[in-house]
Length: 266
Image 1 (tube, rainbow, N blue to C red):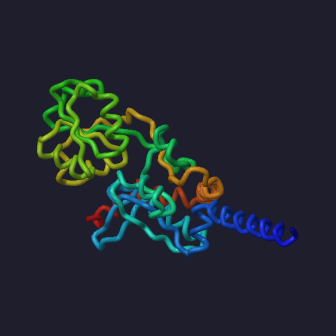
Image 2: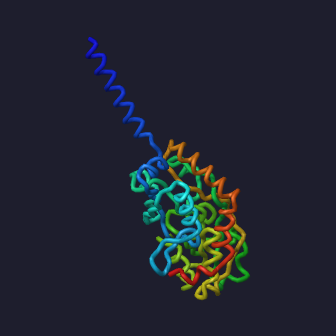
């Protein structure tokens, strides 16, 4: 009887140990491993993008570098298509998502999000032929207009919501959408404000027009698996710390006030 009791007790201890390991969060796993693996889609200027040397750089990437430094681990970026970010996280291909992801109610059913590290909104780029004809998103909601957006983004969702009468065409990358606009294949392109502002600076896009006032409110945050509250707590404290010590402002100015980095982007 005693032997049987001890066996059951030992089994319970072993089971508890394995369950406890299973509950280990992304941050704890990264520290144990020595590497923080982050899924990202490097096509969102200036948050994550590829430079001429093939390195992934940007504002959010710098935040992740600071995060890794604070953890005492290496940062490993895992580039995937934007539509593969959530499936990749759920399949354990990486620890978290750091890819300019907007917090939405639908995504929040699948993920937990950190506090927002920046607030953006959707804006509109227009072909020059629309000069004087379009001054708001409502003006584009007509069957004759062709709208470009990027697959799986909140820009695509905003176009579907606000421009149901127009014809929507979605592309894998924002660069393709802008090029369609430059070529006159579409009338407007919808994407996050920071990307559109920087796209207008490029010589090949300077003929485009812009409605610069955002028509949506979109907090960007880091995404983690549901229930990973210890990791969320650590990341939120990290974001608060860099906001207080000046790190956040320094990185923000580097990517949103200066434009020297544009010459290094492919």
